[in-house]
Image 1: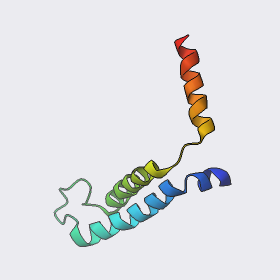
Image 2: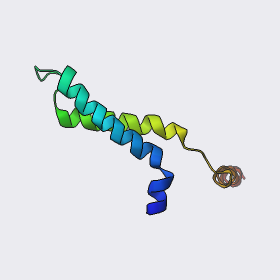
Image 3: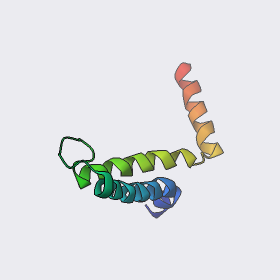
Image 4: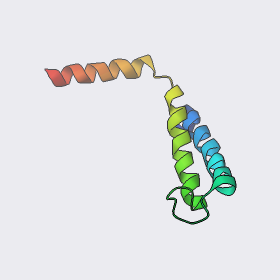
Length: 80
């Protein structure tokens, strides 16, 4: 479990930064009338921005050579 968290540190960091940014966005620019789906609630805004941050920073995870070769071998065996 600890190795998985360390390997995926960029998405965790992105989720934390996104959650903070989402709360700050709701606090200062949120929708007061309640008609906005994302910014009307601090929970919605925080979760949305956390997912957005995790997705954005997950692009920077390096793939191991062993993982990519295993995936290619699996695809080759499926074609046969």
